[in-house]
Image (cartoon, rainbow, N blue to C red; front, side):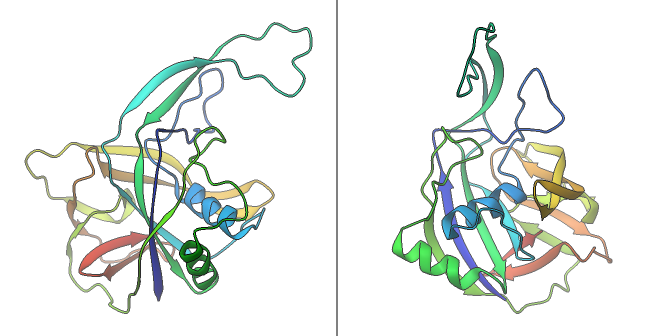
Length: 226
């Protein structure tokens, strides 16, 4: 499998949780569906549906700030506009591993040229970002080890036992959408374990891993593609 690695970063980001209404809470890092949507923006595909997979690595510590914004539409009308509390990610930075057989080559061409068809942003249009190509590599190695150390976020359902280390801040985030079917329709959800400061995670994996999740080696590191 060919894998393209690229970085995205910004001053702020917001990946809104769909289960919040009055207050706009964010996921603690870019979601897999948002990462794939970012690729769709680069390629110019408005309703991006793919079986390609992504792995996500945190390059900066997770930090949030709550702000109040006036969420005005195109026509404010005469109605009173109440400020909305929104949770923002501060100084986010991510390394995205994008692998598969559908759009990898097209993505490589776009990243090499430094051009995208649509604006690229981190969850909301006012959080612009510019993807930077890091590397292109292949992964043909099947995982046979049961003890795994990885720099990427990990689905909780593949962890048999977490091997705790000193100076690590482990956190769980749930409710991520897993599969995008088009026309704003999603199927399945997934929860992740991540280390708050972006450090690696060591765990014992389960013997049987679901087909949507792939552990593979890239340049000596194990990554988890979903």
